[in-house]
Amino acid sequence: MPSFEDFKISTPLKNAISDLGFQSPRPIQAKAFPVILSGKDMVGIAQTGTGKTFAYMLPILQMLPFSKEKLPRVLVLVPTRELVVQVVEEVEKFGKYTANKVLGIYGGTNINRQKEALEDGADIIIATPGRLYDLILCRALKLKSIKKLVIDEVDVMLDLGFRFQLINIMDLLPVKRQNIMFSATMTLDVDKLINDYFTAPEKVTVAVSGTPLDTIVQQCYAVHNFYTKVNLLIDLVKDNTLFNKVLVFVSNKRSADRLFESLDEYYGSETCIIHSNKTQNYRLRSIKQFDEGKNRILVTTDVMARGLDLDKISHVINFDTPSYPENYIHRIGRTGRGGEQGNALLFYTEKEKQDKEAIEALMDTKIEEINLPQHIEIATRLTPAETPRVIEPDNPAKRADDDLSDKGFHEKKEKNKRTNQGGSYQRIIAKKYKKAKTKGDKNYNKRNKRK
Image (cartoon, helix red, strand yellow):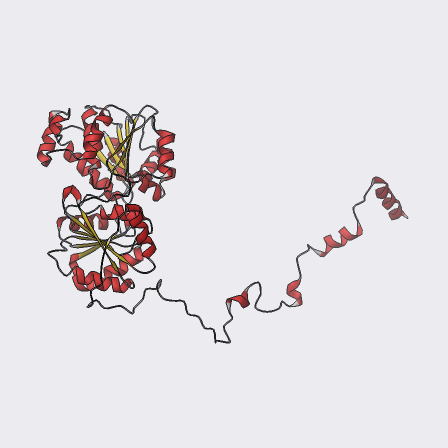
């Protein structure tokens, strides 16, 4: 097994690794280190939770000499604000014995403070594409000194709608630079980005896209509806010894708020929530409290499905079955990290059964199904989305849909059938002076008028 002693790294970096307690590199780190160190463009395909941040930052820090220049030399793009904060903290840990300055840039905070920080200078910029592009447009940030570009979780950036900013940023960067990309899935959009901007990239793969970590035990429940899922979840997490740190994924913000309200009645301060409508400070505080163990249950949307390195999550619960099977892989990758045992549960309704089967097809494995416990109450309460549409076939005052097709409510009155043909004067003049077919006709009309 390789060790960090085999890596050609400086003493300050070795001391930082020793302080962090790392003994041996993970597969993606061992494979990526020599490629990035060689200066080649690289595309890394690895599951979330495999140590990608360390894989690209270690060789970059090794190659980054001390400089008094204020303009940044390394640019790292990540999809979410929380991931910016995390990567900045990780880089500061790796480079604690070096003089390189790291700056995080993301939305949801005062842009003027970030402009002031850029004026002070930074060696490494960690940023979300949206806020970074805003700072470029207002000329607060110049990219002419960038030597290395890292795009982490590029498929998520494209899914979140950052294509425009991402492409424009890459067009503004110096031509001579090293490009490094990491992604858990390879899509056609990602392939196009590689073909357009990378030069003979070397591909490093440590896991096939769609392969879950071996350390995760996966199980599922067939559940009737949303509030039956709530009843099941409330019953499961009663065991705070087994379910000591639970990440619950839902499909959208409304479902997240609805679930949080239900859990809050039973578990109060043990529960917290994150989604895009929450303020940045609220989101960061919730993550910190959950990571430190102050909150035991975190309800979130897919904004938390990628990148964030939260320690010792005992269970990831897919409260809603994701419609994109790749998202399931990213979600459950929050548990079973660092070689520890993880657990993933999936709740699915009859409508979500097809999505569950798509997940199994992607992984090429069946998820173990557990029967719904008999003591779980089958809820009669339905969400607005689950409420069936009311049809009144015997109501004479209510028209059927077929009766309304291509018909108004009543026959139009005569005055409402009129169309605008212009003013009366124009119509009279047009009728009196017809356009002559030939010049002869025109002269004839003139003669007749004089008579």
